[in-house]
Image 1: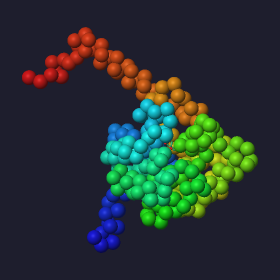
Image 2: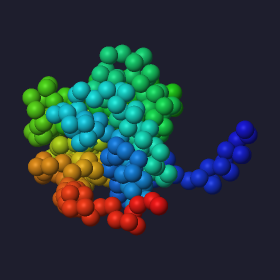
Image 3: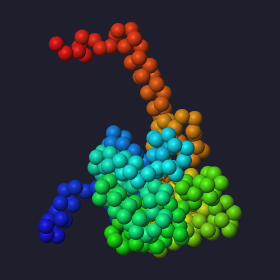
Length: 278
Ligand code: KIV
């Protein structure tokens, strides 16, 4: 296919690209991002106009019932990324590399990132860490895979942090987070998630970096915000983190619907004749 044909095809089918995300920062427009783990929610998020749909490894806590993100496997991530892909038309789809899929060697990191693009249909991958993953990010970018970094409270470092702890609180720790974010930019990432850091540090990093910052528990000054879908929908049970806002109580709506169905069946009210075949 000749290049001009590609250009014509792209005009017909515009969807979010990393260039659109970068442009938002230069135009001072906020970037919106949410996680999704299945096709129906991906379709709804896409229709609502969310810029970035992320298949986060929060899949582990939000959907699979694990206590942390650590047990999540590549196979689980790919299974859900494929489902999300089928529901997304416009948003930029980012696949989150799970713990153990990129740490051991560059070859494993590259191989697994390629799987997200080839099998999962993601347009970019995200991985946690700053300076220690700099070379890996550079290698992925070099081979044409856009990368989103992730610094601050990186949940895959749960054991090393001794739990989920806000990072960068004192001057020295803040400098470490800043250095990590800068390293990611130098490696060629197109954006970075800032998680669990003071709002003041979120502001400083956002002002210092040319690439967009996407905050989660990093204050209002970031270039964009990301939340776990289940937290905004009230599908996380009693887990109500300070940094998330509940926009609906889907757990309550679901409970009511299921109770009504159960009662209707028990009382012989479902199905009706209209809901049956001749
Ligand atoms: O796993 C995840 O969902 C994430 C985002 C919330 C940033 O890492």
